[in-house]
Image 1 (tube, rainbow, N blue to C red):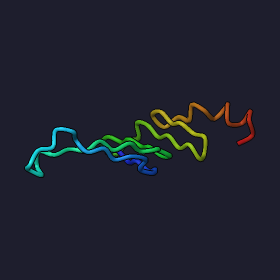
Image 2: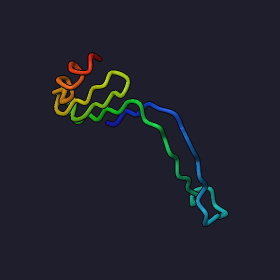
Image 3: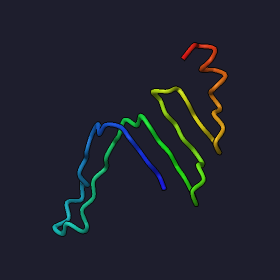
Length: 71
């Protein structure tokens, strides 16, 4: 399961321009502020830009750096 939070920056329609809605596509660019990926209830990744944290398999790999810059 992937969770993503952020703001949509651009939406670009597919340049092919099919008549059928099921064949149309768009590209969406998102400014991501939070991302989390879990599998079978286990956290694989969590990136939180506001809290300056990046967790990999439950371990915050930026905790030492955040403490040094006093976040």
